[in-house]
Length: 411
Image (tube, rainbow, N blue to C red):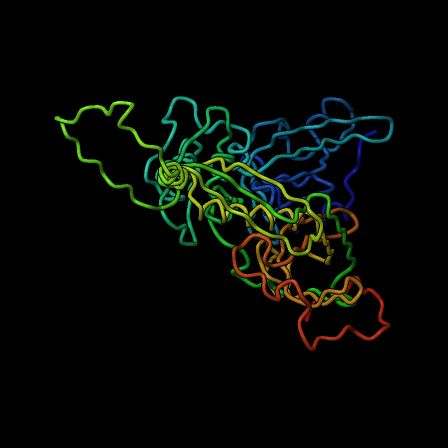
């Protein structure tokens, strides 16, 4: 019943190193480490041989690192020598039968606590006149997380409200939506406010070439012809109101002295409190509108940014393209999310720059493989779409012939 670690199992450990409570743990047989732009927190999953449990169960169990595998302990994960995740074990599954005994652990990086926990318990219910990065710093501070920004986040929020029941991540992300910014975990204890595609990937993706396999899924179910965002806030129309002069001698008007209005006062009030934005997905030709309510105090520009953000994200959800490549690195650098890669894949009819939105490093007896999810480069930014959704001019599909070479590396 006891699983025996073979030399080949032990050899694969060098590409991914698991450290639990400061102690390297090399008794795992399969590993997966994932970063995804849509999931905020990085995650991991390992299948392990547990010498402590085995030693307590079997008289002749092999020995190894004795660590109690249970939820809670801190972990650190290195991929090809680089620290990519610092977090905690959150889930433990233990299975045993006649021919197999194994433990599976899983968890997320430190920012997972923001996803699960409240933004507000007994602190202030709103922040006044704060920029996005300052609001997120105040939300993240109790969790011991550092925040840095790589972009200009625009004008301060006059009021940044926190709902009693919302999570810390939700409270942070709603502000980022209205500033068309990305809020990401860096995997090692920090939060980054950024835009997409500032760096290029370590290599292009080519099929035939360094790509072992590719798959693609299309769907229009979640896409809409127009995406509306409605909100409200003081001075939403960005116009200053005149100050009325107080006159202590003034008397109330009698009903007979009042005159019917022309509606201008109501229109002026509406401009001061109601904000709206709309984004058009010109690839959806049927009438399929949707309306969202802004979750923070918003002006017209904030509503417009959020409408565009929602439209682009729904389009991204409807287009899933996945590649598998050998190893975790190319040209001496790890594959990472939020980097631009040139893609040349005649079978999928793609020949242009694309954005890496998800990276999954996997290692087992079959070897080291990276699974890359690719999206159109305008997916998360606010730049003009232009030709970024079209194949480059003058590029031709590769000639027929040539097999998929699983051992090939990018030039």
